Length: 356
Image (cartoon, rainbow, N blue to C red; front, side):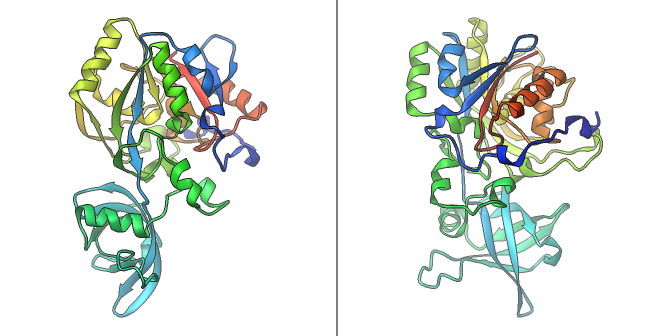
């Protein structure tokens, strides 16, 4: 399909720069193909689900993956910025570099050295390799927990570009851009559908008889990259790493056998569930990378309902929701959301989508 089929105009004032407070006060558009759109709120979710349904959350935890520093070569230095997006091992990360053309293999990079009073606030590394589209592989001098500690000391929350261009990161983002159930460190972008959940909402879902299950998909910075190809067939997704435990797979398969529905909280959970499922709808344990790219025509195997925010035009995620509920349905839903003042993107409002 042509990528421009997934384009739309969004008024700039509808890009959310802060989340709703409380989180579950965000609006939620309920989209059932063939039925009238319904304006609700996230705190209505227990009333919209049934006892026996299962919510699937992505428990990845956002790390401060934005690094600002200098490149050093032959005694000369130049400013450089990195956004880490996938860990390769204890000391090596793949990253997108601002100013990548300045970099060569073997260049030394230094971050955090301006704060000379804090030795832990310093991190050095070496450019190990250069890839395409500004991607580089960095071998840091530190490894394991020591590297993690240094990243927390010198790194910044990697806010999406549509927020970062309008305001700087602040202390509130360290909490706001993290789900309340985040557990496994490794994401450089939040699984934003989960940002709407509060302890009170969780309690009411429990009381409704809706079970909760967790998987891990470390969201990469590739989620921010625009689709530059003119046709979806020519776009390549960046790999992301994920895990579905044996216990989670068994529990979710039992939910389906017992007549419950699988409700994916976010496109990240959905992409991993679909990567782990076979054509018969059985979800298998999973550990590894996925590059799954879902566009209209895809046959969904595992997920019945999707809770997700409103996505960027021409993005792989708008293509995914169009595949899930139908292209015409989602065009109508987005037109309705824009006309009715819904807030878009990471800190924006939500939608509850039923599968076509």
